[in-house]
Each structure stands twice: as C-alpha cells, then as structure tokens.
Length: 210
Image (cartoon, rainbow, N blue to C red):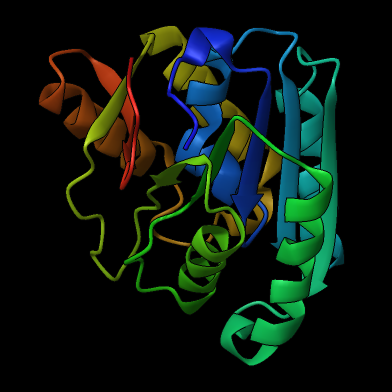
C-alpha cells in the first residue's frame, strides 16, 4: 500500500459519478496540497450534453495550474449505475492497467446515492494497493458519516471553489442543496472539527503513514 506523503505525490486520480462531484468533494484540496507538476487525471462517468459542457469548462478552469492533467468523460445513465455495473467495471479494469496513481479520490463507500456507491465499491476492487480517500457530497439522504481525514482550506480558496461551482454548474442551480450557503456550511462544520475555519474532509479506510 502506498505511504501517504502529499509532498511526494506525483499522480492523482479523481473519480466522479456526475459532473460537479469531484469539485464538490475535493476541489479545494487538489489546489491546496498537491504540487503543480502533479499529474492530475479526472474521470467523470455520466452527463448529458449540457452537463458534459459544464464538466469540460469546469475541469479546464480547475486543472489550469496542472500542466499534466486530463479529463475523461463517460456516458453511463445518471441514476442507473447498478444496472451498468459490468460495463463500469470494465472501465475500472482499463484504468487500473494504464494508470498507477499515488492517490485516488472517490465517493464515500456508504453513500446512499446508488451511482456514488457503485463507483466507491469498484474503486476498492480495482485499486487494491493504493491510497484511497473517499470524499463527501451533502444531499437529502443525510449520509455524510464521520470522516477521519481533514484538510484545512484557506477561506479565500474555499470561497473561490464555491464561486466556480456556481459559475460552471449552473444547470444544478434549481436544486435546493446546490447553493453557496450549503457548501460553505459543510466546509465550516468540517473546519470546526479540525480547529480551523474551513476544511474538506475524507474517509480513509487504510493508510500507511511514515
């Protein structure tokens, strides 16, 4: 299993079931802890035409400071990942053969959204010798759990993250949980838990620390 030393990280794989998941879950962390020469690969597994355009524009902005970066988009049906399990598993098998990241960001294993849960399960199946951090997505189901890794985030950076979420993923604006107050409130709560103003938090099931 990889040792968790962010200063030595050279490659990061970020997995999101939907456009905006990666940015919500770990967007500020990516900009805070990893060197700019880190190879950053994003894989988004669903999205209609509108959301695909949003995902590309958002990734272009987020990854602008990482010259070695890429975005891959898939078109699995939103809300139906359990029915696409075999096909999604093939994508993971290909990923695991072609890419050996130092750190992987994926969904929370006990997330109650079926698409999120499928990706989390397949992440652990495909990448068995990697550092995996599971991010959280606030939503109706109330399934955030108790994360055990906290990354303090500078207030200006956190507010910039929220600004960009609202700017690039405007198709989600009608959802009652997709607003500035909700995103900052969750980050503020996680900040309280680690004695800072704002934080992004993760579930780490297995870590080797030196």
